[in-house]
Image (cartoon, rainbow, N blue to C red; front, side, top):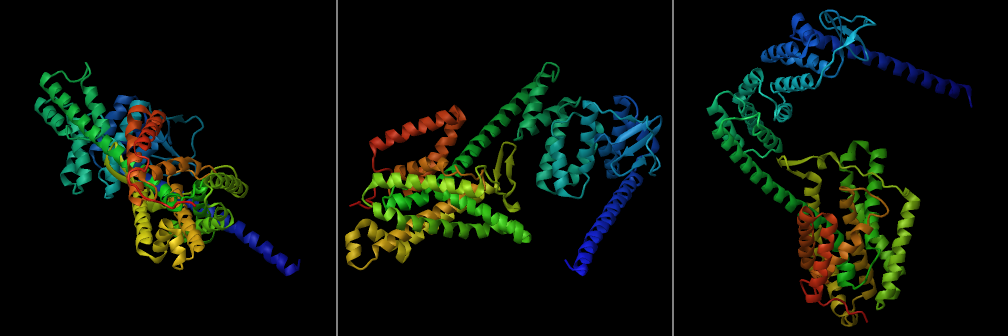
Length: 549
């Protein structure tokens, strides 16, 4: 290696090492400055700092209530350090200890920590009081999210005059309805222990509109022998509990309905491709589940490409994965049709066995390329979180988007089948292959394109499945049976039937799981499907598919 190049490499390594050291020192300096700033900016007096750190619980809680009553958020950092066990004492001295430095809490100056300094011990009661005090002071934040989180964390806390005064003060000024309602529930839950009977009655009536399971738990506690003693207030609390139970049961049912629709959408996505290959073409494709698996792995590959080459656009990798998964699985489907399926038309048993063998080959190929373990596909940030209607009803964004995605795919398939030239040819070949061939339709080309279309739709299902679960070689095996059930139950070749069957199976599964568990629910559904097929072999909607000749 030339000496100039060797010098350049050494210089780069030396420069990187020096830069790293400088950055580390700057970060340490910044941390110390921030620590000093937080210590100096605290509104706590020396007596309050000592009173919070030294002594028994009751005197410390009394000082804590005094600090909280002042309503100064600058006290939060020291309270948080107390909660995080970052405070030590030696006699009347109080120290804040972090990885970067030790600060004298009374003077705000860096000092050496005495070797025999004692830890400040916070038992459960003190820990709860510190949490409540921090949350109460956070109600004064200008950030709505901080205020909402603080209000939620105060639900079910015990009565406290200083806390109640701040809550009332913030509630009176709060303009965000969601935060205002949460604060009203917190205030009512505290007022439920008021010595005034009328206040307790009003609080019980206000809480009857709640939809939070924590409030139900708190009201149940008030009915204990050592809780409420007044019969009239007890009755009001019991009425509030019945009302809350009614609300929670309603949201439970809505949650089951949403989960059922979500499951139905996934089943619909999984079955749509099969509705084309099996419903229209009459091909029993046992490799359909593996097409979904390929779509999921394409999503994983696109995700990794974005991580390595386009990290700035990672949040939008899914938009690139959708067409990629469709095109690649469609091409795999076309190759499968041209190399295997084409020679087996009219022989359904051989088709079944051949496609089953293909599915095993595809599974082993994926294991060889990506490994036998499941791989992780991350949701974009805009698919994380959910819409919260109640404590027991949160609709995740990824499930909502999958429902919308299934509707979009269904509309596109319907438009393609019913409004395009390709769809017209597919329907013509399906209904009368001989006549279609006689009028010039290239039936072998239509076969390949139709099979590629069904496989591409399965790839789209794989994209959706990658956003709600693990991606692994066995992904498709979990959905192949349900996909055939949906197609057969809905009526072979009927998109509308597939929609009804998928939604019916999804909702029925989730409702039955609530009563009998997942295994019994699956058995019940299979028995019901068998009975239904016995009574109506053509499914929900009768349609004459391709007659294999």
